[in-house]
Amino acid sequence: MTITIIGLGLIGGSFAMDLRESPTISELIGVDTNKEHELKAVELGLVDRILPISEAVRASQVIILAVPVNAIDQLLPGILDIVSDHQTVVDLGSTKLKMIENVKDHPNRSRYVAAHPMAGTEHSGPEASMKGLFQDHTVLLCDLENSAPDACKTALELFHLVGLKFEFMDANQHDRHAAYVSHLSHIVAYALSLAVQKEEKAGYAVPRLAAGGFSSTVRLAMCSPDMWVPIFTQNSDNILTAVKAVSEELDEFRQALESNDENKLRELILRANSIKDML
Amino acid sequence: MTITIIGLGLIGGSFAMDLRESPTISELIGVDTNKEHELKAVELGLVDRILPISEAVRASQVIILAVPVNAIDQLLPGILDIVSDHQTVVDLGSTKLKMIENVKDHPNRSRYVAAHPMAGTEHSGPEASMKGLFQDHTVLLCDLENSAPDACKTALELFHLVGLKFEFMDANQHDRHAAYVSHLSHIVAYALSLAVQKEEKAGYAVPRLAAGGFSSTVRLAMCSPDMWVPIFTQNSDNILTAVKAVSEELDEFRQALESNDENKLRELILRANSIKDML
Image (tube, rainbow over all chains, first blue to last red; front, side):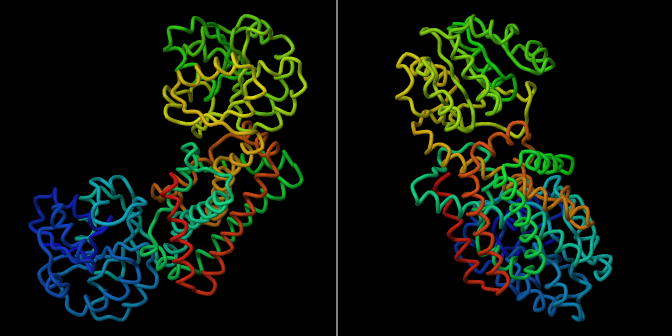
């Protein structure tokens, strides 16, 4: 089987690394708009060769889109235009509704499988690729009733190869869910980073002195805008709801602190502690 | 040297574990208000034996307070009442101003060294103790000009034994700094946990599906109220300033999302990314 991976960053590169281990995959073709990333991906052995996108699509049984979600929107219709009934197109984007809507009337819609593997790190680019990134994580698969059974089977087999577990939901549910358990964490980390940096400029806070707790909470603030601005704008309604929910909880803490209400603080913390049962 | 550790939880227990390795420390005595923790600490070999607090203090060259900050406030004056010029009292609390103020006119003030090791995990109790918890972290030492030189030397030697690096600051600076790089991360994590749990009840968000990013950001939400309510109330002014700062940054994101302002989102994220240079 020949597979094309469009987007040779952390996600595409890590996916390629794991697929490499499988004897059923004979060739991996890479595509990226960044020439340095293309060269680096070949140098690192992530893919066998680089081709222009249309040639790569024509040469492959499976085409995997691992680019920012706005680029998925732009590329997906054109890719579906040229695929046949024997090819499968899979995207790995962090939003689902807009790109699915975008191709809902496309004659080749059924060749497309919409997926979101819930895995990543704060690093980006081909050098950030790592083996086993997806192992034991979950891939959310959306609206599979609109994908051809053989395309679903092909996609699930590849996801199984890299160690992903499956969950199925509709695109609306997905985007709401992702806003809370993924997109919101990023905004919270960005906001924490910005607040601490302002204080740093005022000469007080010194993050280098911080314990692991701060690093853990702020880690996602290192995630790149190229990937995250398109996610935030595509899923802005759900994310706004989620950001408002966090702001309200912060207000609860403010009120409890202002009134020195120890019982209220304890009650808030005890409820927050329950997240343990969900992780 | 005989050392008493008051508070046999994560911090006291981990400190004991590391001190155990040193041939200069002949005996470790444990004190805790929780009888189960006392038994467990002996069973785990964290301390050699348990004594009532006043006997333990009298039997030791060094007394280490590793209890919640409100308990430090309550215990410290009474301990200073009974120590001699050959004994050193060290606290490991996460706030410093109130407890230092509290004993500023005590005749034995100079036997006390105020310290805050910037290390921990979200777990608590003696079973949470781990070797090397402090290795390469920083201990913030406050107002050392009011501690006797020999007491400072004793405390620094112990901190060096467990692998801590030193930073010196006044208690005011400390509490402001700690609000931003430690206490705030906890409130942000608690707020994120509460927001996601509310959504979970509404049937949408499913944290078990989340990637490592969510777990990392929300990890501190598992920290116990026994330790954190007293910290929040003792340092409420600084923490309120810090919480307001984060809320303002969240509002910036809300405004950018509401107006679909990609440039603004990119600019916020790029500035947030700079935290990388400080970690």
